[in-house]
Amino acid sequence: MTEDDAATDGSQPTFETLMTEVMRTAQRFGHRQHIHLTWLAVRSCGTPSAIVLVSEGIQRTARYAGAPQKYHATVSRAWVELVGHHVEAHPDADFDAFAEQNVALLDKRLLTRFYSSAALAAEPARHGWVEPDLVPFPWQRFAS
Image 1 (cartoon, one colour):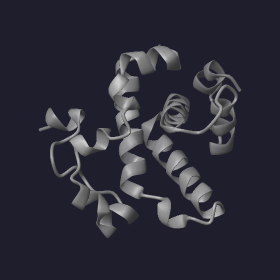
Image 2: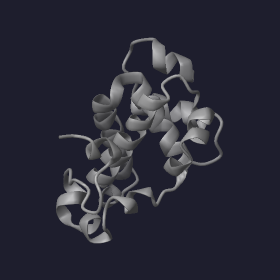
Image 3: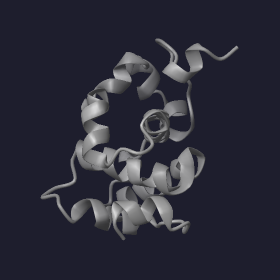
Image 4: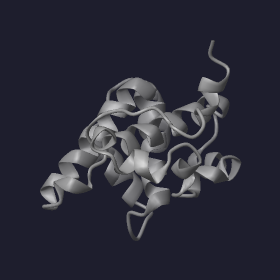
């Protein structure tokens, strides 16, 4: 599957398929690769389905690695929502162009603009969705 196939063939990709696509050109799976995988997921199936796809994939991977405690529900969903928001603004960009247009997404500390460390460390955030406690996400600022 290529990036274009992921966006246009209509089938729901698997986490493993997306991971394979991302790692095709990467030496390691770092933050940029996580954003790339999320970008592919959002473009393939939309933000709501990508939340499930990416979150379940990360959770499975953490369990397989013997570190289920590393999965964080709010962090996983927040990143998918942030990427999804920016995909809406740049739907036709390839990943490199998308990353160049949205440099803030490549900062793995980006969530600290929206969440306090206490909010993210709390059990409710680790196991479920918690809204930002510092400032709302950009798309929430204009909601009535």
